[in-house]
Length: 485
Image 1 (cartoon, rainbow, N blue to C red):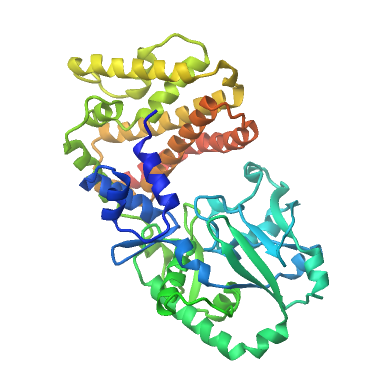
Image 2 (image 1 turned 45 degrees about the horizontal axis):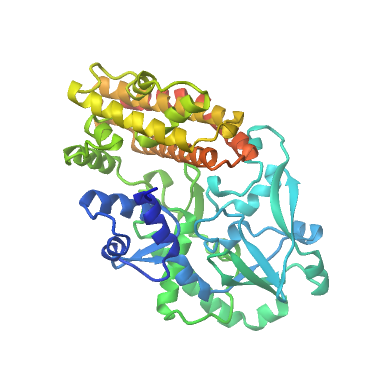
């Protein structure tokens, strides 16, 4: 099977071991370079927290973070319980392309054991207060919807480490990156007296760090958050030091921020955490790209010559917001239910609420044939044994949520609402939700076609989709109120 452009791109990004420009990316991957593909790939790389863009060159964080040491101070609860929760104190050193919890520590060359703890949210959240909500590694995240729930997190078992070093409040854990790609770190003990003995050098490091962070806060980053702001801070520090290995760790991050009252952290409506100056109103900061940029990109896409030999090309030409991911999900629904191929069911979903005729007669035949070919390709790869209930239910609910979003967008078009009338942040959040739902459809498809029975994970996501379905009408009403205000 031919690898998709997306697979080629992600293989390149995950495997890159050196800085690259957009020109070098397209040359190395063989992807077609157009204004549209440059914008889409550039926005995708900008939007994640793994790369720094500097002088038209992208730098993966593993290339420069490896040269820094991190200082952490376990609190009284951690010392009493014999545990350690890295949480946001390890930002931005979490491994790229992995979950925030996918990290491991070594002490004197031996792995540090981990265990699961059940804690109340008020106990857990202080460890993740600077981390975007969607990245908080709570194992049973769906239970946050239940009041007074016990939430599960994985903690490091440092009971013997604390005992061996006679660890006291004020002592430090020094963390050294060993393999950032794999999320592997070494820990060592540093007594408070040692810290005090090097205080002048540490103060110099601290001042440089905070001064650099303040410079970053004045930069216009794409989709900024605390993690990305820290990432750019470390990058600039590494350039000034010519990437020389650090032999001493500065103060712990929270202690630094507490001492510099001109910087604070606030939560955005979409769950991101952002550093900003205390005199700034977070609502006045540019925290999202201009929604009109997305609208203009969509209009430019319509002006491009579409590929009528593909499902995406025809849907693009018709101005339909669905794509082949949705089409394949609809077909998988039919196949899993052991139904015969029904083009009408697919068409009714794709064009629900759209005025008839949905497309010119000369396009309907080729489009139907493309959908039919897709049906047979999926059916050939499908094992009926993988048609278990959680995946079927999840796919139906995701499609239901995406249909609600499509219907809402079409209702705005029918009312003649112009892009400049739309509340930008709310529309961007809605688009982000739609994109996440589409990604989940891809995950479901891969799991089903490859026979992965990850029912527990599917059930967890199902709870969150149920919440989204219940909240979407309220989101639509809020957007309409702002349009009419």
